[in-house]
Amino acid sequence: MGSETSLSRSPSLDGMTIRSGTAVQSAAQPVRLRRVFAGDYRQLSELRRWLTSLLPPGSGREDVLLVATELASNAVKHTASGRGGCLVVELTCTSLAVRVAVTDEGGSTPPRVVDDFPAEHGRGLLLVRGLSVRTGVAGDHRGRTVWAEVALDSTGTAVSVMPPDAREAGAAPGNPPRLSAARRRWETHVTVLGMPQVPRRDSAAPDGGAVRFTAGHHIAVPAAGDLGELARNAGMPLSVIVQVTKRCDFDCAFCSETLRMRDPSLEQLAVVSGNLVGVQRVFLSGGEPLLRRDLVEVTDPFSGFIVGLPTNATRGIEAAPRLAGKIRFANIGFDGPQAIFRRVRGDYDKVLTGVTAFAEAGVPGSFSAVVLRSTLHGLPYLLQIADVVGAGKVKLVLPLRKGNALNLAEHEFITVAKHGSVHEHGLAGRPVRHWPAMAQGTPAARRARRVPGR
Image (spheres, rainbow, N blue to C red):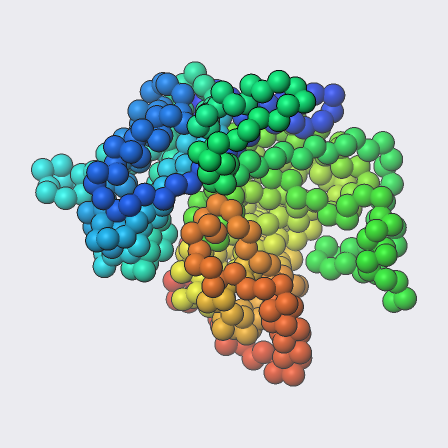
């Protein structure tokens, strides 16, 4: 079964090319630009000039201009940005699509699409939805980010972002160009995301030294071994993450993977697998890997590894029975009780139903929670839920400052030291308190489990 894409306009660029056994990125690397504008209608023309100077001609550029102008206009009209404030426009460009995000200073009501064209308000967002392949909103009354992704035209023309004063790049070799203030300002707003290359390995033996995995959840080291020294002496990574899709059915507040690319083919994944000989564990990650209808076939090239599946489990009822025996465990994103979960991630009932489906299919499960300052109080309850559903491990991770996480308030990012203390507190409290079973799932989740094939 072939790979899929979430875009309805099917751009023709491939996200990767296979050459000499190494996965490389053939298209232009993703580029992110950001600019702050005053919350004034007169700034809309400046916004259009800025975008026109950055994007190449084509039908895609006009769609981006219309979408950006409408989102910025709404921010000026309906939020505090238009009452003496400002707004932030962020442009993320790949060879497949352009994502426009406008962050305002908050308002009493969220943006609302009105399908009734004669209506007085809401038609602009209807236009945005019509021009975009994907839209969304994050935040609350204190500040929201409204975003839309616009596909490129069917020719697959790559987005080539041109910085101001680009002629300066033509300086003679050995004579570094003198950057103007305009160009320096541009460079402070750009993030280029690289594509690592994985060298081919010829040895078939695992090269993790004395470090080994247990049933897939944990790392085992000799009692007298020093973990740092063992890691330095290892000839290969113990664990590798392979993204099998960029698509996802959630839009988590902390998500770092917001760019969309075509799914790698089964042939490309087979080459990746060949490059990982000697690695012990492979995570087949996303996006949301359960969105791939050929996920069972995706696991085949990795049958010689300990295979973990990071997932939100929303399609667990359908997928779990087919994946039993194919994966060692499911690593399910789960951040706490209902109120926290729904605020930062999505449908609590659907995920909890998927967690149960994996357990009933005999697939062990772990939890992975992204820790924000506003979710710290929910961690004891998360451990209780993990006990109830039989999770083998709860992993606490910090958000990356990219994608949707760029829209988080600065205070949400805790320090590594704080993260460590939270982890130690959890370890100390769990055996002492025994974490009594306080979470049995909501009624909606229990009803969903009784619906065959849902």
